[in-house]
Image: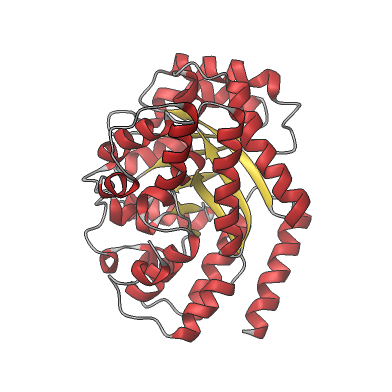
Length: 354
């Protein structure tokens, strides 16, 4: 979806505000790299790897991107990932995302990847790491684009399978120490509470990884509490249902626990019916550390600027509120202190001159 299309559900933004959003330095903290696989690249990789697709054209595939809930999206997401077979495939997908992110003035991205989606298909975990990392390192060297990798466990699978994935990945850790900093938990929330992964997250904490987990998108506020108290996470991915529990809200405010909110994703997966109903502005104005992210942008109709434009228009966000969202993203990142300071200074200089 283009930026103009992303704002079609909301009041038109002034050209000045659109330009402000486009130019503002940003971080992205909730991005599934497999969810950046645009239909055109998906078809190209299918052809390259001789993978049959159940769609006759790019247009037919795009037309299938009409989801009723999280599961209906996941079914197509996993089918699309089937075209990823080689290190070059993972490189091409990641490089394409970086190009889009840089165009949106994203300075730093912390990227989820799901090895189990690929190892279940017989793809070696080393191929997954190598392709993604090669693109991220190239972007760092060529453009100064900063990034980190967050290996995520699929919550619809067992904790034993998560442990097996961790053990398969650990021998690679030293080679990817410059990038692989975190562990996450994603896929279908319903019926898969955080407690299911208590032991493997405890092990990851012992190993010194940063910990995050999806919670409170389709799952109840209790899942957010489980992620905090059982998994000991440092960020909540989504977290929009925290508003249903006033006591939890106060805790999130007091602890300044970051929420990596994905507005267009919430709209596309029917978490909200219209963007004007989204609670991002209420959460932000209540004092929560809310950030804006694109989740699975190829499937949900927009990258970072599209998400900012959509909420700015629908929720009447002010310039200062947009800057606060960007500040929250820097503060919530896993960047070293010096890099956070550098990015913060860049944002404040932008604020002073715009």
